[in-house]
Length: 447
Image: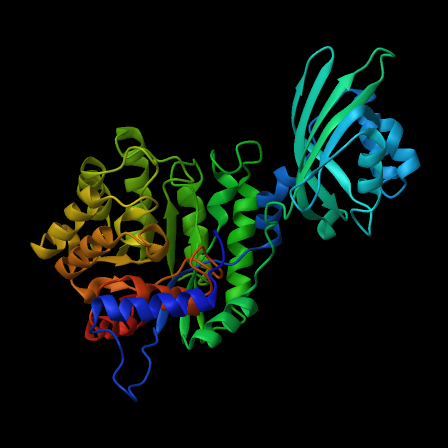
């Protein structure tokens, strides 16, 4: 869930793609190609938004004398006479135009006119010595659910001869890091309508709440269960448009218990696993045994699976792909098993993808119900023509009928569903007929 593509840029990219690749450009008067289903979507619950945003507003502790200086900045944000004593005689501050003001009075005068409303400093990184302090963090306006990060800052403070801390340098940049916003089923349906997409598969983000990577200090079975239920409730508002998959950490002691609960509710169409978030190591036999047990239970319950396979940015290839086929996919012979992001996630791995493609092309019985979605493919491979040609080659080896369109939204790094499809058509060197097949593909569990 990463951010927005500009529609104009997408349109230009599409035009360039047609020139470069040919074949996919619609004939004059031909109807546009529109996907039937988006097979990989997410919502953003208030709980997930709070989890993602927690570091933006959590201040690191600072000594009382330095905290007093920061409170002075906040209290006197528009009062140059009160600001001036907080700075050293030769203090410097950057302007919004990229220049610098130097000297206590010039700095105070500039800062008193910089904003039209108060703001506060949230120091996140703090380095201290006996006479020097360096703070970095976020500039925030508002409190609670209304809090917004408007910029980032760096402060250098020096303890002067009178033993008082004063600011020698202030640097600010705008805008700040994005604050995660909630996105509901209604929001998703509006995006689908904009793209002309009829249906979507909504994957619960519950695995965030028992993730050693994403919530190491807040792992909670209760929050995981609540997130699955929130997703189900959202999707239930649009039963003709959306279906839900529950999620969990397959290494947890309660994984099968939660899977059984989700299945018994009748609210979920399948199971989503994210090996990266759950820290699953496919080269660890203990991990593999636990994952296999969860997958086998999903198969028993006749719940299809969608799996983000990659867990490491530096180590993912043929060895992992072979284990996945031998030990994990083989545990679900009766339900569709979809590998997310074509090869498994994040940075392109032709090593892994080649193993999967060969398994399908050679009619390996383990791959009889193996499918692939292309969520975020346009982002990972954008601009790399060699990589895109290789991806298209592997897709043809697999067969376009096994490839499912997906975006990983509602708004992902490749944009809205509409923008993501435009970018996919712009980037992938497929023919128009192949794009039509991709757009019309519907997973077996939705037919």
